[in-house]
Amino acid sequence: MNTIISLRYQPNHQCIHRRSRHPSVRSCSLRSENRSLQTVNPTVFTQTRSSSTKPSSSPPSSGTGSSVRVDNLLLKLLLGVSVAAATLGGVLYQQFYLHAPWKQKLGVRATLLEPLPGIHTIQLERPHEQKILTLYFNSPPSGPSVVIGPHGAGKRNLLRKVLQGRPMTLWLDLKERPVTNGEEFLRAFIKRTGYILPSSGNNKWISNLLTPRRNQGKEKNQFAEEADEALNIIAQTLQRERDAGWPDGVPIICLNDIHRLGSCNDLELRNTKVSDDPNFLKFMDWTMHITDLKLAHVIFATSYSFSHLDLDTHAQFRHRRYLISIEFPDLTLVKNFFDDVMARPEFESVPLSPAVIDNIIKHVGGQEQDLDRLLTGLRRGDAYVPILREMITDSIAYIETFMDKVLKEKSDDKIKAFEKWLRMWDMMELLQKEKRVNKRKLIVNVFNEHADELEPMLAANLISMTNEIFPEGNSKKSDSISSLLHQSLDSVAITAGSPKLFTAMGLLIKDPTMLKQVEQMRESIAKKKEKEKEKELLEKKKIATEDLEKLRAHLEKMIDKKTDFIDLFGEEGYSLRKAEYIYREEVLRKDLLGMYVELEKIRNGASPPSEVPSEKK
Picture 1 (cartoon, rainbow, N blue to C red):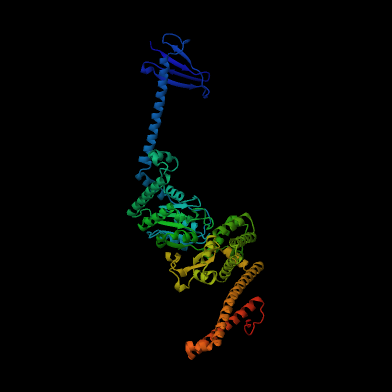
Picture 2 (cartoon, helix red, strand yellow):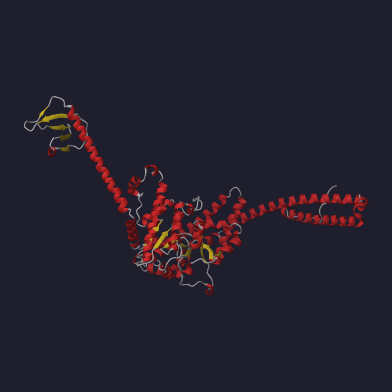
């Protein structure tokens, strides 16, 4: 007789398991009434095909229980095989399709072909620079390009204006995608190209399955290998475009605000150079490789301090890079921009006269963040005078905070702190007189051996590097990239970090309180120097006095024992030695007299003695 065994879980779960000797009858079903799992004792029923179902009073046989356990093991085995098959399918999909080199190359090229979208910030037209950069980027590269300029000069907007809508353009902005170290930067760059790293995101567990257990802890080595493979695939994709004659244009890789890599662009908060990071160093070497092969332009848009203090510490990079300087826009362009803005409907309620616009341009210039701040206030209905006053007051406070920090840095030696503070003051006075000062001239006339003091001010955007303005006959060709390059030391000049900072410096150096502070510092330095000079004179006087006493004693001995000396050296020898001692005594007396004069001037300004006081014997 064919028997069917049924297991029923009560009260909420009903699990009916029927086992038939005939394969067609074998089945398993699970029903849940309230979807809650409870552990209950099963009641076993035995029924035949010819009789009704009745509960059995006898316990189930041992054979029946073993068959149930076999079925459970079989279910687990089938489930495990299914999971393994699904995992293996995922691994094969990831390894042989998604991460296949040909698939990765297609992804990179598809990403490069996406046109760069436009920008929605201040649209200050700069046709001259746009024309130069467009011609430059449409030609094959010959090295990495480093775009520098003052903070707020419009480097980002100018580059986006030149590159927007252009295929074969890869844009990575570290302001939009912050990173904290070289590995994060390299991951962000590779991801931006469309390349899929096996160890990124949801693919990491699949990558671990392909990695031997003994190597799973070596994630850094694993990423290094993946990064090498990714950079190689990207380079091969770019090489195909070059070999095809660049049908969609010369590829461009633009890295904006690269100085945000690490903690920030602050020398006090950054303990090591970013170029010391092995992953970033690998990326720098790779950029030189692809630009040398003319595969793509690589643009580092950053600050001068980061370019000078970090990127240029890589000697090979320093020799191959092009340094392109983007200055603040010409004031004529800024005036035209204001005329266009004031014609918009939202500014009809705040009409500005030409004189007011000229005054705004004088203090704000082409600094884009300041322009945006001013226009936002005007759009709200604020008067322009309070907005300008607030901006300049804030700049004055920023400069004063920096100068106060200088005093605190050398609190243990006030005189050195005063000297450093006054060098910065002298620099501001010189910038107010000449506006642009040749860097070497500034170092020689103001900082001397303390040239390193310029670097923190550059990093803080208090000052900026700019191209020196030459007479018309000596200027570079205005319609070529050379007009935006630093090609000689003479072309590098120092200026204020922004127009509002220039205004703030001018107000500070005329402030009566600041002038009084400067006077007090100079007096303290003068007194300290006088004390040091007095100490030095006293030491020299002591030595000279001792030498004079010894000389006189020797001369007296020669006179007392004249006969013995004549017998020893002869009459002529004795006379020569005596004249020499007398001459040396006279020289020492004059030196001592000069020292007395200097000491009297330092102490109380009394009239100096006519002769050196006679020493007591």
